[in-house]
Amino acid sequence: MALAAVDLKALKPAFGAQISGLDLSRASARDRAGVVEAFQRHGAILLRDQKLGPDALMEFVAAFGEPEGHTLAQFTLPGYPKIYVLSNRTEGGVPIGAHNDGVGWHTDYSYKARPVMCTMLYAVEVPPAGSDTLLADGCAAWMALPPRRQAELAPLKLHHSYQHFMATRQYGARELPEEIKRANPDVIHPLVRTHPADGRKALWPSTGTVIEVVGMPNPAGLQLVDELVEFMTQEQFVYRHEWRVGDLLVWDNRCTLHTGTLYDDTKYFRTMHRLWVTGDRPY
Ligand SMILES: O=C(O)CCC(=O)C(=O)O
Ligand SMILES: [Fe+2]
Image (cartoon, rainbow, N blue to C red; front, side, top):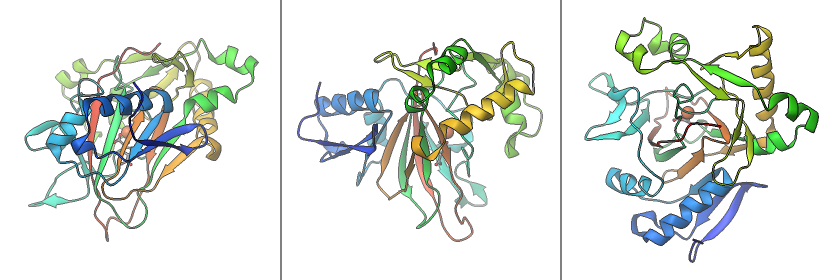
């Protein structure tokens, strides 16, 4: 279903789409379906100047699928377990959200058997400088590889581990409770992922959760992963999003990597509302 009366403009050549002329708080079901269709094709979509409270965000996310819960429940918005808060604000000395979460190239929820399909970030307040979000286009990176390299990489699988990931995080350095370990067993995912909407291929490495390339001893395996992340995150494959209040950015975790960037958190506040949509088993 095509979008009625809205404009699509690429975020960078052959990647992403900015959708203008649409107020999501009043969009019809048909327009929402058009937004989802654009998302399926372009890797990321951006809508600016939106005014979306938590109820409107919950209504919009439903057009994409089932909202996913968040691993760290203490950072969700009160009354909205599916809306996660990224923020450096505190209330009564208690952080209201996760701070500097997501700095380092990764794809969300990669430590799960069914990683999230997309991540939606809505900008509530943003610093005047810094805190850009960078998205790397895995399809463009894959297409830029010579066929012989593609043939070598296509069969490879990556071993992802939540326990390893948490051991490297500031807030996770302590031993994880047994029930959290049981709920997050290690998983194996393909290095080259097929997009279910149209079969396009994407390079799909990650950092943080990857502990080995299956069947390849370390350090060679992890060196290969680092090399591929470096390749995929070269400037030619990256879109840099400079935030404005009211931006809604949705990226497709099945064919991109992303990273947050730092900002002067002694001077400025940044608060974002994040929603996730459940995904399929990667192939
Ligand atoms: O805050 C950002 O710019 C990125 C955060 C992130 O990686 C995430 O929410 O998944
Ligand atoms: Fe992330």
